[in-house]
Length: 439
Picture 1: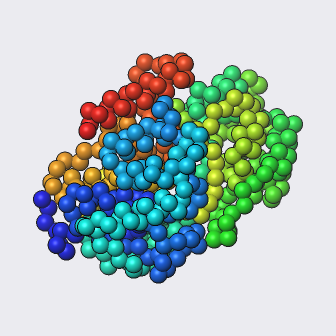
Picture 2: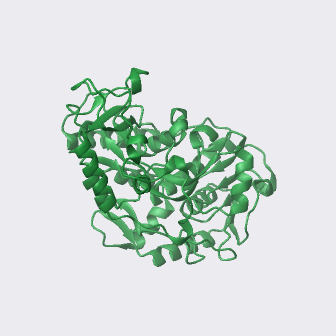
Picture 3: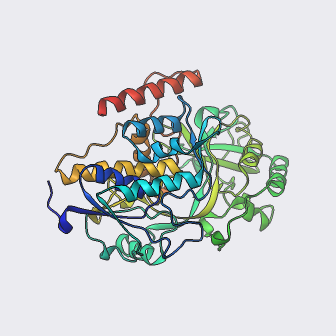
């Protein structure tokens, strides 16, 4: 086993979902863990208590459906003996196909589980610098990381390592794009024709702008109010600057001749490939605060997207995350310090349970490293393997956006299955088979 200081102690910073799961998994492997949590000495604008793994927004971990991508993620986590999942079931409340919980019961269970573990020492202190933390260490401080620690991380990674807004555009299932209307091309035919282009005439564009203006918006919380960066401006904010703004921004048609007319249209919505397998495409420049139902309604007005299936809908909210493909190794350790690991939402995953799973994985990766074992990640066809690939794939570095688990991340079948439900069932079967073999 690798020698390290502090009496074989591992430091974990942050007792949220990822940090709590990671600390418990490491302690179960025989390590002494020092877990730092700044609440209630220093609170965040979003948290209401000092309990561990507090659920700040919703009280749901998403679908438990047997043939859903979130359901598969839970199946895999259960195989790895996830503490978060076990306590979620204990705190479960009726929520249809979703795993809903009583927040207070859940947080109380997690707090007691962590504090009762004989190999975990909890310290209620604020960590303000990476230099103050003995290695090996895991940073799982989430999107509301203390400002001083965030600044320390910026210095560690270099300027612009963090994004302070979660600028997420909708992601669409490739097969739901109407290719009789949308065509593939790059502007001025430069490149290899990677973008789908959805054309609009003047009447369609004007009606589209009117519906964006009328659509219900999700207002930011008090701690999220700040100026937007130009690079992640919500489309509704651009529209407020003038009805033609989108035509000179993300919907600029210049250099994109519609093959049906031989001329460029009044406006164009571009879709950019979102994964290697080309099963998912994102709407370029379409960050938005429109309510989810409104997004589906309004975006299906776009020619070529009448029957669009949305793998992910758009959002903008305050966040803090690393450009993981550029700054982290495959085992989620820093490229500048291999004994400094990161877990949770800060790595670029979205969703409570996705954050939990990064904590689960980091505990395994750190254990492998300390035992001088080869790096052994979950198989690519699994939900965990696909999620890990999504946040560490270097080809995503220039357009990296946080993601939750969805079928667009899983590799496509070797033999294409046209029936959507059968295809999902086959992908889940492959994920389970591969994961079982890995275990």
